[in-house]
Length: 378
Ligand SMILES: [Fe+2]
Ligand SMILES: [Fe+2]
Image (cartoon, rainbow, N blue to C red; front, top):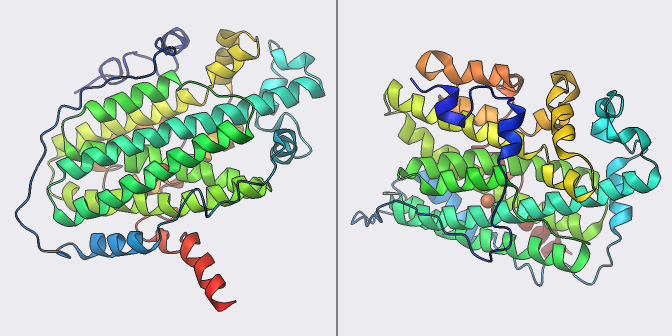
C-alpha cells in the first residue's frame, strides 16, 4: 500500500518545508511541455445514445453554447476596488480573521491601504489561477476525446473542448482588460495538472479534471458569483458555471459506470489519486505568490495558515462541497475499507458527503437556456 511519502512526496501532509519547496521555476517560459502517455482509441461502435445519460448531456451542450465576445458586455467599466469592497463586506480581514489575531501575524499592522492591496492581489491571483485551470481543462478534455472508448463520451467531450476554449478566452480577456495584474500558474496547481495529463489511464483524466479540479471550480465560481455585484464578472461566472455543471456531470456519469467494475485494489489507486489532488488544491489556496508579491514573509504566512483550526476554515472547506458527494456517488469514499473517507475526515471535509451530487444539477445551472427563454418571451 502506498504511503503519504509515495502519494504526496512528503510523509506529513502539513510539512511546511516540503510545501514551500514546491515552486514554479519556469515562469519566464512561454510554453510548458508534458508527456501525455496515452493511446488514442478509435471505436467502430457508432451507436449513438448507447449511453442515454451521456447522449442527453451532449444534446444539451449543443444547444447551450454561447459566445464570449458577444454574449458578455465588455463595454462595462470595472473598478477592482469596488469588487474588493463587495467581497470583503464590512470585514476587511474576511476569511483571515483568525490569522489577524495570531501573535506572529503580519496583518497586525494592516490599515485600509494594505487590506485593499491584499484584496486586489487576491482577485488577480484567483482569476489567474482560474484561467490556468481552464487551460488544463482544455487540454484534458482534448485528451479524453482521444482516449475514452465510448462514442457518446467522445461526442460529449468534443463539446467540452469548445466550452473550455471559451472559458480560457473570457478569463484571459477579463484579466487583461479589467484587472490590474496577472499571476503565473501556482506551483501546486501546476503539479496537479501535470500529474493528471501524464497519467495513461483514461479514467484518471476524468477523475483529476472533471471530479476534482472542476468540482472545486464549480464551488469557487459559485461563491464569487454570489458575492460580487460587478455585472460583467457576475454574468461571466454565471455562464461559465452553466457549462461547468455539465462538465462535472460528465465525469460523474462516465466514472459511475466504469468504477462499478473495478476491483478494490484498482479503486484504492483512484482513492490515492483523489487524496493527492485534494491536498494539492488545499496547498494551492495557501497562495504563496500573493504573500511574496506583497513583500510579506511567504514562509511565515504559510506556517500561520497551516495552523488555522478546522472550524475557522469554513471557506476552504466549502470548496469541497461538490467534490465529496460526487466521490461518494462513485463509491470512492467507502471502497478499500473506507480509506478515502478516513483521509477526508483528517482534512476536515467529510461533512459534505450527503450534499447534492452533480449528476443532474446541470439542468438547474443552465443560465444560457434560461436567458434565451426570457429573451424569446419578451
Ligand atoms: Fe471550464
Ligand atoms: Fe469545465
